[in-house]
Image (cartoon, rainbow, N blue to C red; front, side, top):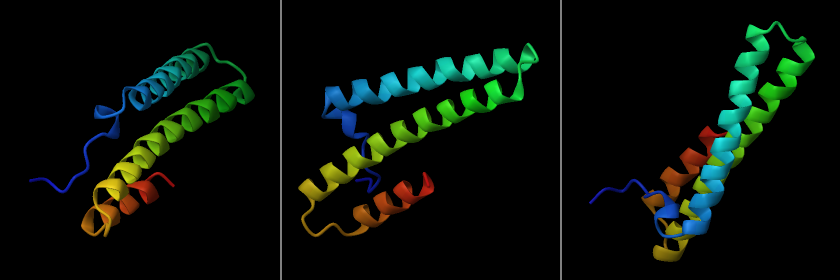
Length: 94
């Protein structure tokens, strides 16, 4: 049995919908950044779009880790190795 936590949305369709929506938003924003660079847009516009992409991806990651933490803590009262692994995953987003 793997100690790697499953994606929490497997048990929560609403969480999955939120993560997918954020990632789709980031995908669209990234396409806008690429187009802006190709069109020689003003650097201010490019940086603003990059910031939006970064925030959307970060929020999606935080949603995934938060859901996994919630499930892990509910399933394993003592936490243990899974909590340590989830903590590392969370910190990797910082």
